[in-house]
Length: 208
Image (cartoon, rainbow, N blue to C red; front, side, top):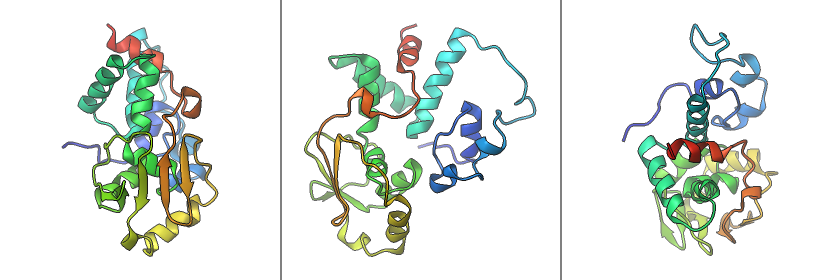
């Protein structure tokens, strides 16, 4: 499956805001947005007036990059959200938030979503006692996520714990730091998602 493999800081600059793709670095003065707050490329500093379609497209691209989702999968998530009861845009964000890699990140078991995705892919986590290595695995209320026993003593995990030790876990999740386990206590409500997203623009884009 194709995936973006170039410098991820370029994605933040393209969207004009932090996407928190580099973990701890994003909170320092080394962040590319802090140093060069304009789009990459020779025309990056030029002022451009965007069309309505362009604004909607940029919002979709930003959300895709926040969660590290490819185009085809994002479209599937939108269709899934449209079939559910409730507000389509909020349903979409709820689906994205309940991906396993995102939940690992929200629990503080990874310093960024890309790192959390890599940890899941390498088999470091279990869901309800069974090893799951699929980052896009969608969790349900009551599911228990745990760091695999063999992974708990690794230097990588210790380093992550040192960085994320004071991270606030969203109220829709429960976390036992001593045992490296988390639980989906409820589905996330819109107010629980702290990302600067205007989901109605994405709905408008797909409604054309």
